[in-house]
Image (cartoon, rainbow, N blue to C red; front, side, top):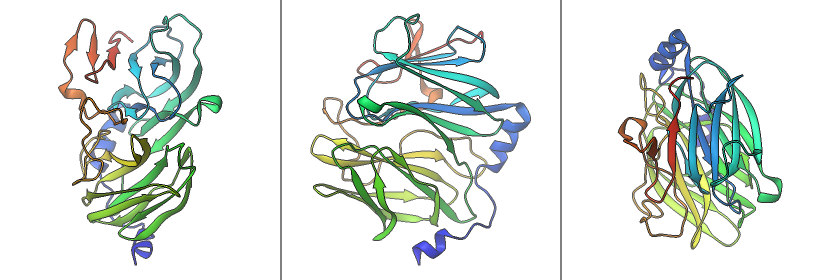
Length: 278
């Protein structure tokens, strides 16, 4: 029944008012992520096309960290990844281009193993059928090469391979028990999937096995993209700051406070810098 419900593609889209407003203003959204388990922390730069001054810089981005969405003018951008602490003028380890369309949202993520690291541009959905929630799965666990992801006991991604990204599926709004099932580890957590919300469930390697982290892409009808993390009701939600397990940054862009030319995104050193003159 859950799978049948996910096939319903009619209804009023969530976040339509916000997307329409941003499209009229000529702006979109972009967020940056590090989802490569055995790649050390990196510095990530966002450049507008033809401008060598970085618009945004994220310092010391570790595995499992995702920035909030940033509002940017529609147009062409490049994303460069350098080793943490490397000079801004040094050759990037990786780079890619992304075209931001007005009213659309994107995630640029470092994916795969260190030996095959790549920057992948993901188109983030901001709409879902009326009365439904939407969910997709990013499989970022290297220890478990293949994971079965279930929602309410039903497999929504029967075989999620490492570094894969599923398509979005519409599900009934509810509080669901979700599981990531590997050959040697299973993560279980409960998440509130409210009507009109859009979610990216990220499967990570934790200190003692698999973990599931819930990124809320869109928070509901008429709301701008959320981009941040919503924790569940137990399980792996809420790591302490001293935990060696990776976790995703739980910070809204509006709450950031400028410190010495950069904005601190993480207690242990991830900083965001912006160039407002770009």
